[in-house]
Image (cartoon, rainbow, N blue to C red; front, side, top):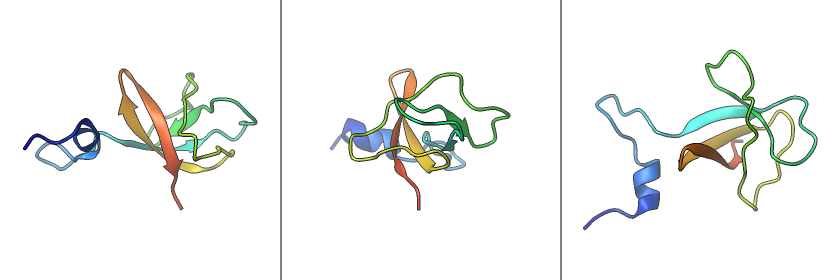
Length: 80
C-alpha cells in the first residue's frame, strides 16, 4: 500500500534519518499577519513571511515546526 502524501511529508528520509521538516522561532518583531521565522542554524531571520495553520496563532518568540509545502514552508504549530 502506498503512503498518503501527508505521511510522505513527515516521514524521515535518508540514511541518517534526517527529516524534511524544519524548526525555528517566530521573529522577535512579529505583531500580526504572516510571520518571518529564524530557522535553526541560520544566521538571520527569513526575508519571507510564512503561512500558518488556522488552529495556531503566532506570537513573537514561539518555537515552531514547519513542513514543506510546494517550494516553501507552512508553520504547523507551536512546540512546547
